[in-house]
Image (cartoon, rainbow, N blue to C red; front, side):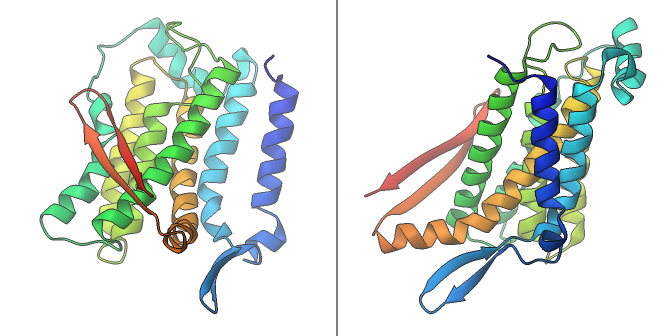
Length: 257
């Protein structure tokens, strides 16, 4: 049984109220701090959630609006429906470019905030949060794609992956130069635009996917220190490594007991 529009609207409004509440914006909810020998999660950098919250909210409004008033969905998407252009296939690869850039930079000796293993753990957590959220929403909302090829349009998985990687690249290299993040977000934006241009997604799908991707990475950076410490206390280590076979990308994961 699928949730109706009112249930989804209520859920998103509650989420936005929590994110943008005065106490949250003041920074009084969850940020990592040291407590003797144990790391305690007592706060979250909530101000950083404004951008993903705006993207997610806009995507939700677009998705739930009636077909005749879908704002940018129809202003941009409808002309493409009437005059389908030639497909751009590069977005199948560009969604992984920001992530690949982090590992490429490490390989040529330009180090980011974390070593290879640590940033792989963060990436693995980001991918887990993103994939779980995207697939849960795709097969719950069952939104029809603009080209009517399938009922899994909302949100855009390609866009979520690209923006997850762009935020990952930004977080790792923002202390060296802001241009790494700008480059990553430019590629991610082009990936999302291609999904609309290829008639595979509405603008709302892309907006929601972008917000979800950014949010997944921010959540992973917040949680990873506590997870690492928990595994260390139990004498376990977690390792992840990315892969790309020319068509599909992903992460392999191993946990030593």
